[in-house]
Image (cartoon, rainbow, N blue to C red; front, side, top):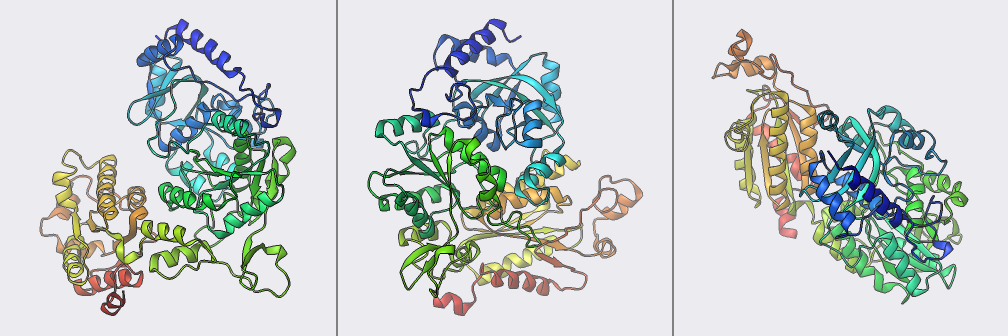
Length: 608
């Protein structure tokens, strides 16, 4: 059992730490705490209390944290999520979901949950312990959590009330597909922050930021949130914020945790920020990164960001167009209006205790060679702007990105990190019934690709992968899904190095194909290619007699007979090899690759 004296010592030390004075000015008061101090649940490393809790934690059930959990726990442990002292218990969770309030009435808009599987929940219950140890992927214990609640959440209600209910919203998609079924809630006793090995000079805790501002005498600090590279419009916006008050200072405070799937990686973004910082007036701006896991939650997230910046010591916060917006769904319908988040957060400005600075979209006026808020452009002036979609297109194609839009060093960094499609890897994921022609078309496609382009081409055939990569797996649904995940992981590594991958498993389960896509599409083109050949044709082609054995019952779990096949709803390519020849099938795939710029024609190649 977890020794009672260890818990008492830990609790006493945490209470003392939580009230340890930071000697900061009133203007820097933390959010929602009675004395205005940041929550501090960390035990001093090496102290007797730390050693006792650390040793006792070895006998506790362990929960290995996901990337999302790691981001959340760091901001719980360092006070960024003040006044939270741990992952939300059931009452806190329900209050936040229902009305953005903690049980004591404090405003907090986003649920911070620790989710675990049913199996892990049963293991914790069976242990008889009232606490668990939370570890990172390498097994380092980060905190002990005293479990106060364990429950099955209403995910539908969480998604509807927090994020608007559209199943395609990134937060709801994550909730439905990647969040486990049981939530654990309880207070934390911190043993150590998650380790980081990059940008150590830019990673500062809220307490360290406050101390920095105090040392510099920064009484007015405006924070700017970004998850994208800063282009000239962003820079001009922050400069205009500085111009509002000669005493104002600017904290460029980008996210380096989790952002929207498909966003530019944080290493590239931080390099861009570093290029821009010298352009600010000397002594009036600084760059600090922080490990938030964004939910892309628009209105609620705007309030959340403001609260976090208050905890980091900022006095002002910029809210612009489409703040924390996830864009639109597959039907082209925006999840939120362009100023929904900004206007919603402004209603809570006084309660948050942070001055919110609303900004309009910035547009460029070439006649004046300057940026204006869109509502303040002098009459008759031409306006220029580039959408994010257009910028991404130009990066893919290599087309010019004008200097009025972005600084040349920033564009150079982005081009290195985002080469045009003809320099990226790609993956063709064949899926279809046994006998649909996957291996045959894959082999023919490999030969054609080696003829017309220079990337190395790797074929991951289903049977061969089964013999090597997944030799220990059976044919249960779980094992089949794990097999596809493994293939997807290998494919992603090849694509990351610029190679072409042809994967040819049956891949019968839609969920596994989605997991595969998540692995690969970050590094290049992903083409789910459904060979929709009718089962009658597949049976005629069956030289091994597999269908006959499956229909007679001597072969179990055979896809299409006694094991279901999830027909792809929206594959990039669909081919019926009963009516399409092998050559035509290959031409269809190659034509798609050429149309998207992953393969160049001879004329295009010569022009480069």
